Every structure is written in structure tokens, then in C-alpha cells.
Length: 350
Image (cartoon, rainbow, N blue to C red; front, side, top):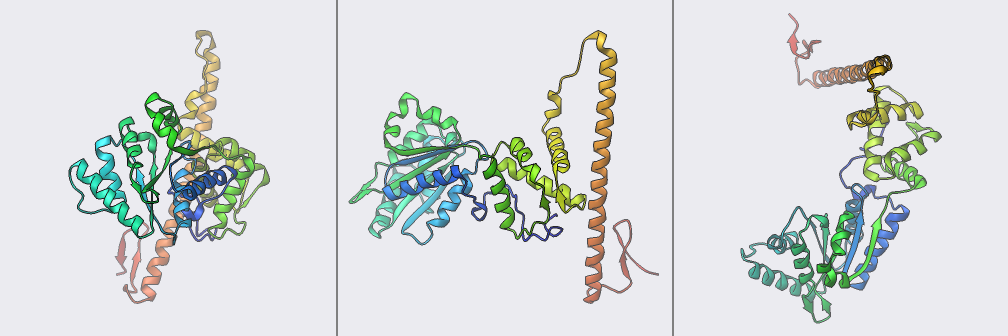
């Protein structure tokens, strides 16, 4: 919606992981270095953890882009509550194997044959398990067992484990001792700092042709950092809403006032306003009344602003519809006397 207003070539803050928008912050560079080190070692497990929205999946997809053209067979498994019985079949399917046996023994035999054939062609197999914290302990152990496949020149399968911090708790348990011994490197991806947060936003904007429109005021960056906590997904959500606000209010410069408005909107939508305490003592009736009136006035003003934005969107949509009808008439696809009426229907002039 705001892309054409700011003359952008795409949506800069989509929540979908896209390697085109991978920004190598200080933390992401170190995590990528561990992944590249693991590939060079050609064995063992690499463990990467990070908070929800830290950019782990985008980083993995960027890794796949860098591996393009190399003799490496890659597969990504997004685990969603897989147990041990489902794991081997899921790995087979992730590598694109067809007509897999229904029983586990047949699946293991099929997978081992596939890995040996790949090794004979000079190819290595890399499995990336995303959201690994969703695996059961038995499934993780099954994953470890797959690393036992050995060829003439070493292991036939290498695995990267990518997930949320709680997986580290599982790794510390007594039953994970053998897996811990096979982890050759591990790294926890934390939030970005304020300079990286700003660089991240500007990088994503640059990827879609941003030419300083909208201009972003210098004093908004600490505000964005504090609100987002330096987490990429939160930054994306916030900046998307900030640009949408700028479009609705037809602004080409965004400053603290707009940032505060978006923060207020998001906090309301997320229920943050409920945490604000209200006096409840019986003798504080007047205080409660004044507070309630003040809250009502604030909510009414906020609602009025939202309605104004909605009106701008409707007006924009109506103008776009008129332009489409005009283009169709000019191209001869519609009768000359056919016009959209204000109610959104079409009618022919008498």
C-alpha cells in the first residue's frame, strides 16, 4: 500500500524469511561463521539458538544461497512436534526421496543408500533442522543416530540444529551426553544493538530502492531500538506500521511523534494498556473518575485519528478504481457510458 507512495520496488519489512534481506549484524556474522566452519569440518553437529524472531531462518536461507553451485545436497526440516517414529520419514522427504517404505527399517535403508550414492558422486549431504526445540527427546536421539552413517571418507550426513533457547536446556539433560560430544560448535544469536538496529532498517529499505523518502529523523532510532529490543521480527512489524502511518497521513518525514503513535497503537493491540494501574480504593472515587474521563478522551482522540486514516485509505482506493475504469474505457474494454457510481456499483448513463 505504501510502496508506491514512497516509490519503493517492494515491501521492505515482510515477516516472511527472505535471503535478499539478510543483514549481517555483528551477531549474525558470528553465527554465519560457525555455520561455515561446520561445513568446512564436514562432520558433527552445529547448534545455533536464538529468541523468536531473531532471524535464524533467514540466516539459514542465506546460507543456502551461498552454497549454490557447490557439491552439497541440502535439506531443511522444520520440525513441528515430531516424534522418533516420524523423524526418519521426514528426513527422507526433506531430501526429496520418493516411494519411501512405510516401516522405519526400510526408511533407514533407503536413506543410507541415497547418502552413499551421493558420496560416490562427490556430494555431501547437509540437513538443517529448524525449530529443533519442538523435537521430542527420542526424536533428537534418532537424529543423532543418523550421524552414524559412515562412508569411506567420513560421515555421510552432517546436521545443523537451529532453534529457540529452550533447546539448550534439553541439551544439558543427562540423556543428551552423546549428542553433546558430537557438537563441534554452538552459538546463541542475541538481539542487535542500537547501531545494528538502525543499519538493519536502512539496509532493508535500500534493498527496495529507498531514496530517503520518507526521511527518518535522527532522534527516532533510540525509540525504535527500545521498543523492538533489537529483535528483527519486532523491528519489521514496527517499521511496516510506521511506513503505513506515514502513507495514511501523507508524510514524507517521520519523527518521534509518528513513532509514539505507532508504539501506542501496537501496545493497545497487544494489550499493554491493561498493565497500567488504576486506583481502586473506595476513597479514591474522584481520582478514578478523572482518570477514566482522561482515558476516555485519549481513546476518543485515538479513534478519531484512526477513522481519519481509514477515510484516506477509502479515498485512495476510490481514486484507484476510477483510474482503472478510465484505463479500461481508453483501451476499449468498457462502454464509454459505463461509470462507477459513488456506492461502488456500475451503471450505464441513460
